[in-house]
Amino acid sequence: MSTDTPLSPTSKHHRFFAAFYNRSMARTERTVLSKIRKELLSEIPSDVERVIEIGAGTGVNLQHYPETVTQVELVEPDQHMAKRISPRSGHHDNVHVAPAESLPFPDNSCKVLIATLVLCTVDNPAKALAEANRVLEPGGLLLFHEHVRSPQEKTAKWQQRVEPFWSRVAAGCCLTRDTASTIADAGFSITRLEAKRIPGPPILRDWITGSAVS
Ligand SMILES: C[S@@+](CC[C@H](N)C(=O)[O-])C[C@H]1O[C@@H](n2cnc3c(N)ncnc32)[C@H](O)[C@@H]1O
Image (tube, rainbow, N blue to C red):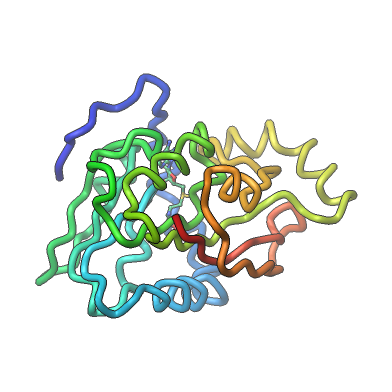
């Protein structure tokens, strides 16, 4: 595992969250998320072999990449998560223990960057997206799937109320982020934006899936 960027002092490490992440997500993965992950990653152009994934967690996306992707640069700041990633055999995947706000890659060095279930949790989404924009080539593709602030005012109010508690138990996850706006504000042109409602508690039902060009 490479550790080419020192952990930022604000990086948090969540041993128990990491240990239970896959188990706690298993049902949602089985019933909805797997399909969404696969569909999203199938948007990677077939001539792209190397991609960057930010906040890769335990590496759940790895099984869903098309075979044409031979090298995934998995960026994950929490060592408890990172150590659970099993790079695919016969591929050139690398794990980088680093935050999305400070990516260990040069400018314009990548064609595709993936963010799933992570822009809710990064300390500074605007900075993480500015970094994504920096490392992507002009015209590079950002693929995202994120849960967001509900468009329904009543639910959004509940998200706001619950957020301080939720954030503690879910390793810093925020419920009220308007991630599509943050993506656009970071200089990306959103090329596809789909609002999805996923079964689950109302505070976690509203998601966005899509793509944006740097
Ligand atoms: C809910 S998990 C999602 C993991 C994975 N992306 C997935 O789709 O299953 C959120 C992940 O974001 C990571 N994370 C937290 N702060 C981060 C940051 N500043 N930069 C990058 N990743 C971060 C967490 O350590 C955790 O692995």
